[in-house]
Image 1 (cartoon, rainbow, N blue to C red):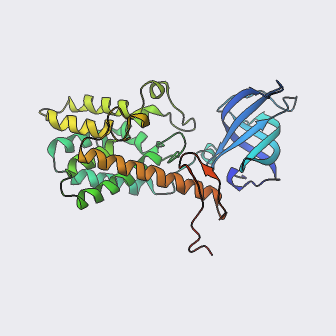
Image 2: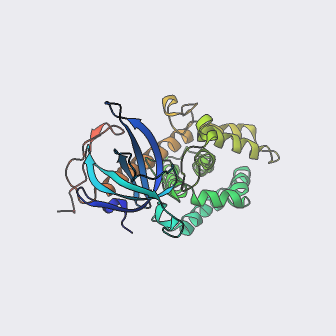
Image 3: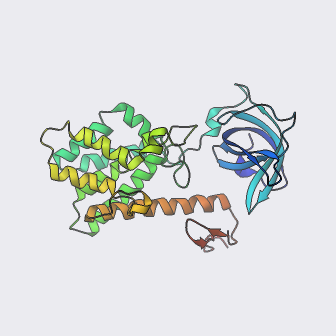
Amino acid sequence: MYYLKDYREGQKLTGTYLCKSKQILKTKAGKTYYSLILQDKTGTADAKIWELNNGIASFEAMDYIYCEGLVTSFQGNIQMNISRLRKSEEGEYDPADYIPTTKKDVGEMFEQVLSYIRSVKNPYLSQLLQKFFLEDKAFVGKFKKHSAAKSVHHGFMGGLLEHTLSVTNMCEYFAGAYPNIQRDLLITAALFHDMGKIDEIAGFPRNDYTDEGQLLGHIYIGAQKLSAAIAEINGFPKKLENELLHCILAHHGKLEFGSPKVPALLEAMALHLADNADAKLQTLTEIFEQAEDNMDWLGFNRMFESNLRQTSEGRL
């Protein structure tokens, strides 16, 4: 199989890919065309079908499609111009080739999560963590396989686990560097902070927002699930519940970034900083991985509000 990341401008496009999305649009002249997002395990690529002729068979989003065409570029990014297309038959493709997956060992990462859980001394927080990460097998199965985002950062299978562990590792550092931080509260909040994404985003291969995700969002969903679980733990202190929920509700840092509260606790600020740092550094990592050996300036990036370039040290 020829993967999307290996295509270069001027090459011929031939192969089966997952049609992640399909839009029916019109040019300025009023001519109908299709705009697609193709996906395999190496990532996604923009594709266009300008000529809707007999060579284009009927298909829908989330179909596996066999494509022929030409690889071009648009605004510095690869774009596939498709001239022939048909739905692929079962047996012509392996679904595993179309699901981007973490490069890290899922078993080892989850064992590190369990190690953090074992280190939490507060009996109420420990019991709450165990309810999800040890006793709820369905939750654990989804948590290990889920992405952390539709796109942007950690948008691959195992991404939620990888992101959660990275954030927790940073929070562990903060707890050691700043003695006033309540470590058990911060570690618990870090492990739970994105748990709502399991319901906000559908599993692979769809990996898109659910109706619940669109209407409620992962912050509210996560806080709601924690509140329900806490209600089942006899004697769970109300003040501790409020502090934990505050950390979850405030972890995006600002109202305009989707948090219903801004950080008011030391632990909430630490969690926000760790979450933001990992999300942005992973996003940059993925941008530079796609650039491969291109050491030139990559152009203005709206998320970072800057022109971006890879570091040259060690690459000369």
